[in-house]
Amino acid sequence: HVTWRIKIPYSYASITLGITCLEDLGLCQKVSDGSKRKVVHFDKKGKELWKQAQPYLLNPVEERIFL
Image (tube, rainbow, N blue to C red):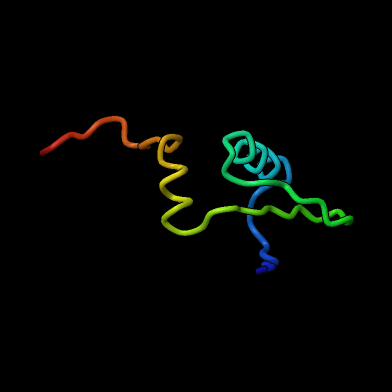
């Protein structure tokens, strides 16, 4: 069990939406710890998690132009 306390530059709403989307895709679970903290649990890690996430990842490159 690893606990990280990280200060990140994103709003509460953005983080909540991200966690909800990951949970809807079956990539993680929100776990209640009885406090106001958000605890996210990933059943898989490393390459296994990466492979599970692959179908949902999009390439941000829309077009390549060679000069």
